[in-house]
Image (cartoon, rainbow, N blue to C red; front, side, top):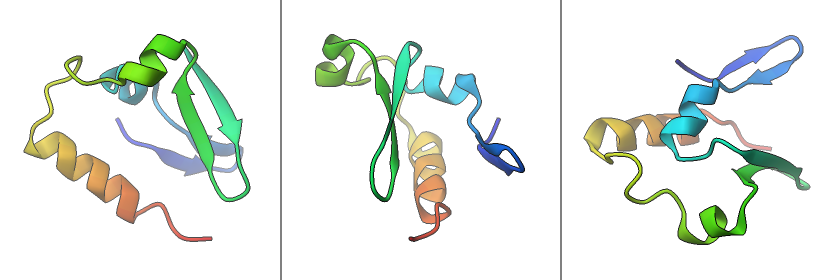
Length: 72
């Protein structure tokens, strides 16, 4: 399960969002980034702490995604 760039755009598997505790989400576009966030204000304010076991593997995968995102 990984994020992929395809001809039509960027594909983000729902499983990744579910791991982060974001199942019902909205997409906001900003000048240099796209933000995917929970629709409910409760989820936005309290985040996903406690919904996913945060271990070294999870942190490494987030760091890899961050470093592989490219710069504008």
